[in-house]
Length: 143
Ligand code: THU
Image (cartoon, rainbow, N blue to C red):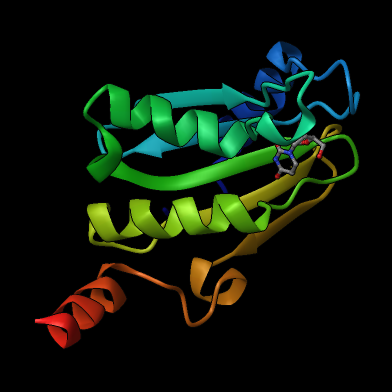
């Protein structure tokens, strides 16, 4: 992605409006940029059984997959009240998306007011990721 994708950051902030977060009251929005320019959004989706809650990034990535577009994800923007940064589970799901896409996915984190933006690579957020390659090595050992 060339320069800062302000439209994507704005889409992530916009998706905060659709957060279902009655328990944490911490609204998060995520937006994916696909290779053809399309944007797919997601919002956190909480549950009375707290641990079942889904993060905005996970919802957006699962939506991309449901539309057959996971391989086309180039960047993700995440927006939260002060700032939102992908949790460990979302980092692992992003790792799977990178594997499917065959490329690095740029990660942008922003505040609700848009004043602050941080950029990361998944290699920074999840070094030494557990991937398909690890599973295949384990299978090979069993054979
Ligand atoms: N959350 C996200 O959706 N994405 C993040 O990057 C951090 C956390 C959600 C999970 C939960 O619904 C709420 O924010 C508080 O943790």
